[in-house]
Length: 348
Image 1: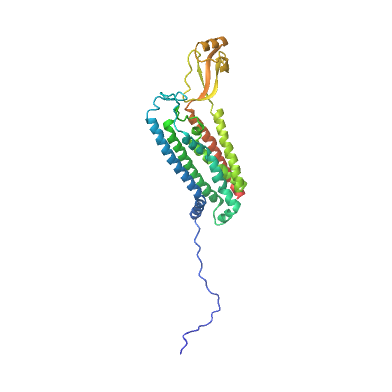
Image 2 (image 1 turned 90 degrees about the horizontal axis):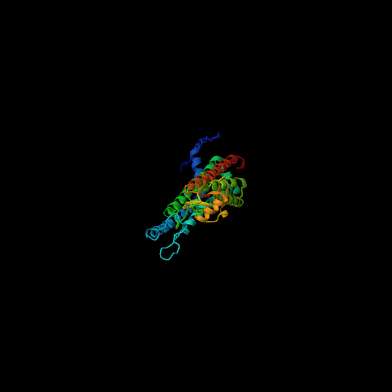
């Protein structure tokens, strides 16, 4: 039997190995990878935001439908914008719409910067830094700028969409009963701070503040506590500026003592009333505590008063308050974002 195994000469030289070709890494793939990772980390928060928005839309549609049915019933036809209240023609009972759910939505919009700053902005960078997972991401060829931009960009885009839609839902629900004695006036805190572009600016402020604090504090729990403090104080501070008219000055309305003063209507009174002398001095209204009539004219003549005044903000100042708050909160959001980008190289 012949052996089929053939042996050849023994080769002792070096063996040739085929060169391995490494595919070039594209910048676009790194960016898409960073964005995909950011989505994986934030998709739960995005889902929660979508659920909150869906619930708000459903509740607004339900209660707004009931509000329109009540308005179309004719029960409120005799009510105007002037009186501070409206009553039933038969029993004299006050007539008001059920605006409590609307005010709850306004409170949610006011609290957005606190919620977003604590639960979204604070862990955005601090969680990776605390666990050290950012080093693994940066080792894959993703730069610090791409790592930050993918996370913050996704969070900021979602924040703008969510806050903008929530503010729009509030306005859509509020409009049928806006500035009515049976509804909600524009200067109510839930309407003034829970609607309009300032809601978006406030939400971005909360996100930017939480992100910057996360870069500085590094620990998630510590960052969340700091974010709660900073965003909460800023929210309360702006509400204080509204009440004190610190950023938006009131108008002074003057009337003679011989005629009744113009009704307050939808103006937001400061509660400051008084009397004016010929020299222009403003005195307290208690100097002549009489309504329009003969007693008031006699008292004014005795003390040398030539006119009365009161201070209030007209309804048109709603937009002045809105754009003032938007400028303040938006400016702080841009400042905090710029500071985060500048400190990124030193801290990460």
